[in-house]
Image 1 (tube, one colour):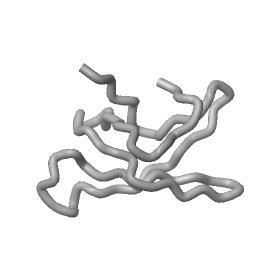
Image 2: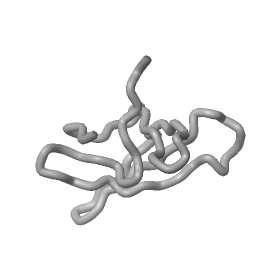
Image 3: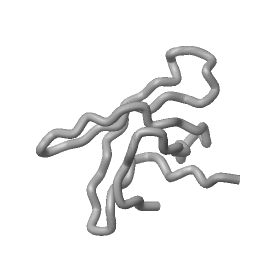
Image 4: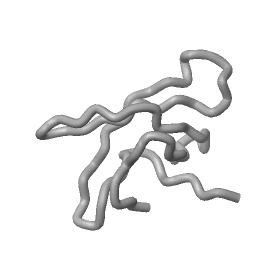
Length: 71
């Protein structure tokens, strides 16, 4: 699912594990952008990861993740 722009505070779901992550910060460069993601579980620091933000014609997407829907 593409969004217009990836922003801090958005929740994304990992496609492999199904775990939910929150975007805590973004690092944008001319050629590539990265999102720093923190797990929602708060079990430890091993849940933090960095993922690449992919630009598409319809917006932005985080590779390996899908936007988590609110219930």
